[in-house]
Length: 289
Image 1 (cartoon, rainbow, N blue to C red):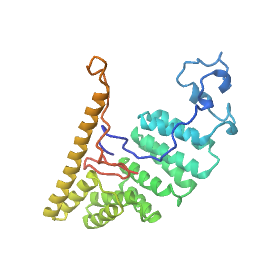
Image 2: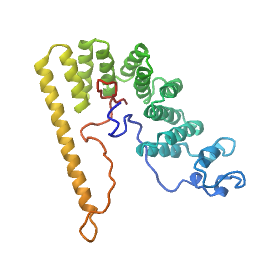
Image 3: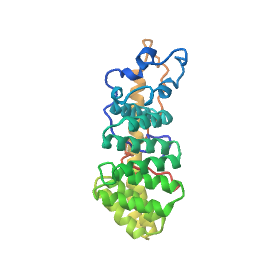
């Protein structure tokens, strides 16, 4: 996983976001068919407690909308709520691909909470549905990461290898495989894998930092230094852009008296460090797809 101050450590599938108001999430009891004598209408758990197959038929629930709800929770780091939304999306999905996508994202949300056992279970469920679909390579590499964090290092490498077998143009899978091989001291194979990832378009500061460390392990110190300098330049440019963006936002926040109004802007992470792959810091915090 990556720096916890940055963007989400676990990239997840892209959704369409919110459209019109979703009726099933209206807390008005008549819309949900909830007996107000049994449920406190301001209870924050009222939706998850009532949105199940006993109270709402599958015909009344749009699983893709539930998936979008979960994705929007992920964007604001509300991972517990995201797991609940993805779980219900999987329950109500009538299409296998949508159900699989929900399970993959549920695994990502559990990983953000460092709930590795639950993450492993979610990704295994996704692969049970289809182990060769468009989401399978993502599930395999996320499963590899969760297994690594859970201490199952040998099995983790097996799933990292399976990811690139499913999709040999999966840059993030090649990077993950490079990380695992390097951790096991197989530096030459790791270098081959990370070069594949870079050739496939995965070139950011964290990937270059990992390659520099692999080159050092192989004794290629001059090339490692060059790569490390390029990575540092990427980080510096990203930090400069972040300063410029904050300055611009601060200017927009100026009030009529010319004084800046209170503006609570949390750090959004380094622009150059994209999240499609699992970039690695040697403390074990590395990204995955």
